[in-house]
Length: 284
Length: 246
Image (tube, rainbow over all chains, first blue to last red; front, side):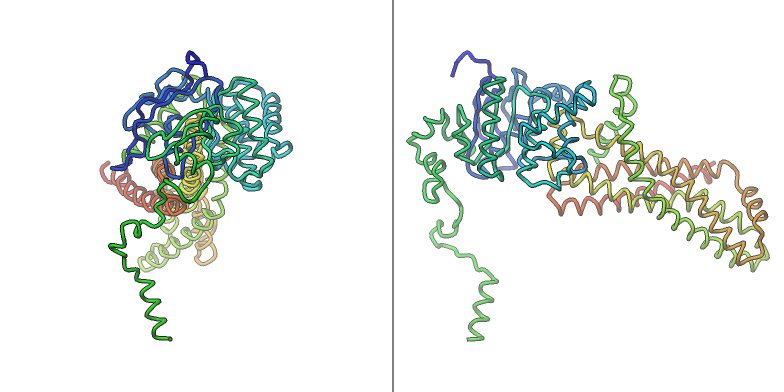
């Protein structure tokens, strides 16, 4: 990692509160050009919230997010649009427009933001769909294809304008192992070939270790650990080890059995269970 | 309310100002929405308007006969349709059919992240989704109202011609004589105002949905109720201005 490398993303002291609950607490990190940063962490740890702040869909309670050196937190919608043309985003669900075909979905950014002719756009759409292994699916509607396919169409759409920066929210969940490898290789090819920068939110550890040049693990509203895949793999932090090995027992609090944790002080009466017991007593 | 006003302001921007900065709205989507909002509503509008025309004529016959004034039946049908029943009832149909559909569609897009995806692709949802629906509604509701007026007058004619002693020429002449252009225009102004209310309320309800499928259902209901109330209150206000205050 070159310390002088250009920062594509700079997040400084990002704080986000929902009511009294602090979801993101003083988060700071940078992403350099050409890197693939994987953000991981348990469900509900604020990964998606962090991603939403980086794309300008949410405003932080305090702190600064800079994309390509420009601060986006205070930007007006109009200025934000200019920045947004430089990055692509793959949503967890694909977020395809249900009323349009696969081809129209991929063509949408091209139609809206370029002056290319219809033939050129068609060619680009074909090429992008080929990249994600969906040649010949142009004329199907999103509800006629599987969830994994939707996601790949979403990826093709995110790449339609050849962005400098790609955000992916769980790009490989719901894909079969082969398609996961295809999507990972595509990400690698783009980051190595065109110096695209990628920020990937993922649970999928196999895929994460395959593509990441750096990993950030979130937890308790902050960054638990960050480093190269090797550093993460050899991290002495038990939380990190538990997460990357997917173990049920460990230091990460699961909130599965909060009542027992509180020392059996107050087992809440559960009306349904009580009624069932009464019923059993009567029928016994 | 704040959202609603913001939506109206940004609509005005995209329709009145943006075209002069080189951001024209595309014609294709407007025509698609005109078909969805307007053309597909014609059978329902026709049935409603015909029933209203028939009902008006029957009620008029019942009341006017006792006064020996059957000859004024066409007047009553014509004026009631042009001034009140036409704009109001066709707006009711369009609220129930097209307004709710718009709210549900935009609401579903909101909860399935489609709207957010548009924003992230630097596509303004108001420009891309609301403007075509708005323009389509502004054209189609008045058009449907004119269409409905014709059908309603046809319904009145059916009663007069087949149940009473009118001949066709007598009915048409009497009807045309009774109404002047202002009766038509006042109805048209109403339906333009209603179109504005219906589509902005529906779009606003759809775009502000929160909370999944349940939220979409609630937003759809809210849009219908709010649009109906707003439309009926506005109708009273406009009738007051057009025929009472003047």
